[in-house]
Length: 157
Image (cartoon, rainbow, N blue to C red):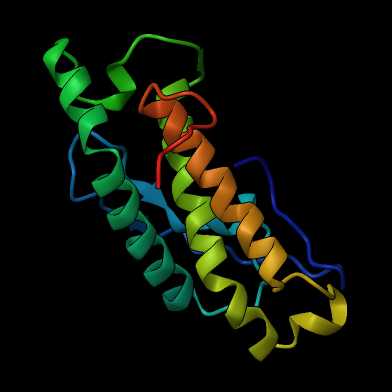
């Protein structure tokens, strides 16, 4: 993460640099500060609250994407970082997709917390049902891509 970030007041934001160890060795460990910064979480949201949301999202994404692990392991790739594809620095397209899915789901889970810490006044609608639906849809589309499924599907009811 490049340089410090600053809040609206001009004060630097102190992101937590805690590593969140992934229970599935195929997927990368995550960094709480990266989540806080990339998803522009309120600076006064407790790190433990954000960390728990990421842990819950990891469990959901790992369960949904279990067949992704099997597919790539069957092709001889023990880690997502080893899967061929586009790459930027140490980030591969698969690890980037994984992070995007986890972080979107985690932020969707945290939206209810924003109102309790005064976020509503500075960013109205940030915790709305529509915002939550958009974040969950973002995660779902990324996971569908990881699962090699089309963007949309039709199912019989």
